[in-house]
Image (cartoon, rainbow over all chains, first blue to last red; front, side, top):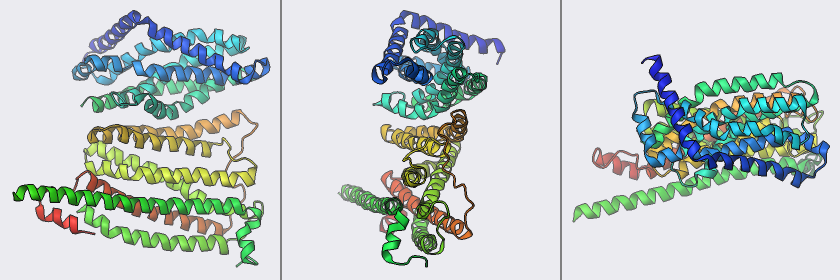
Length: 227
Length: 61
Length: 239
């Protein structure tokens, strides 16, 4: 199988999904609104004291980003599943894991990347500044694609199952824990003056690992779901 | 044997609550599991018997 | 073939398990001395450590059966994985409960976020995920294979969680407490703990074999009426 057709099929999928998403831009907007609301709940629950907010900021922002990603998983495969397009994808000669990789990356561009872009503003709301803000953005940039890749496994497993919303959360959240630890840890280290490099490199490693392994598991799960 | 008396044994040096809760919880879980499996076995075999008998009646006719 | 064999093995495993538990408990309470640092509260390890070890062994064994099932497409393998999950979840729950019971008098807190307890907690969620996937999916074949995929993904996750939480604890140096026993253990303590672990292992085998037999009956995975009518009625009469 030629290199060009491989790349051609991935880019084809990405292009198609991005086009579709631009027609449904409200999906991306919903993710952002959810993120902002959830983030705003914490000061309301905990109190507006700046020192406290600065301490909890990395964790709160990261957990909110994580939950936003989790909720967006409902849209990664379901629309195509309902339209019958997913069944076609499984039958195509190109390796399903590559198609999945393209699909999930497109999904991240729509649902995850906006989170990364909005994060500095939310960080400022919590009193994060300078280097910490940069580390926050970088950690989310590395982390949210990983979350999308891992989450896709869960989304594929529960395709078409009733009550799948809660079930996918239960399946995927344990898998999200390491990414959360490294992501929030990077920002916390930066705030503490230690520097976020160690955590960021671990995040990078998680991303690379997920790019290689997750599509394969997701493809297996899709085949099982579509049999 | 290192316990002076039965009450010393139950007190466990003041930690009785923690020690006995742990052991009793473990025992209860195991007993519950075995009982639940027993009930499950009885139910499964009853259903199997019913299905078998239902089948034989039909074919006998 | 498996069904009657399993049926004959169960009483043996059960009997030896009970015997070893009696021996282990006797050693744990009447032979092992009082701990110098922790007093009598340390005796909880005689159930806590075996339960924790079982929770992890059983998850790995379940994942192996899941992998074998996916590889060989063998229903019995999937049924074994199905039978293991509840027992594994039970031991995970007990590990957490007894861990809290041990932690409170020893370190003053019902819960600490060290790598071991946190990994146990995640393990419990993963067992729950495996079981819930099975109950939520109606088609037996899809349920088998989806649970298998999740079990396999989860088996990779647990060591990752363990190391990432350890890392996290070294970053946040304030409250890092470990559930490990610092002091060296007396030989009798170690022996009693090992005996209890083996006892739990044998108990698990007995219970899991009993459960897989139930699953086989429920899923009508015994020899069919068409193939071997004698075997079917024999299985019905079998104890």
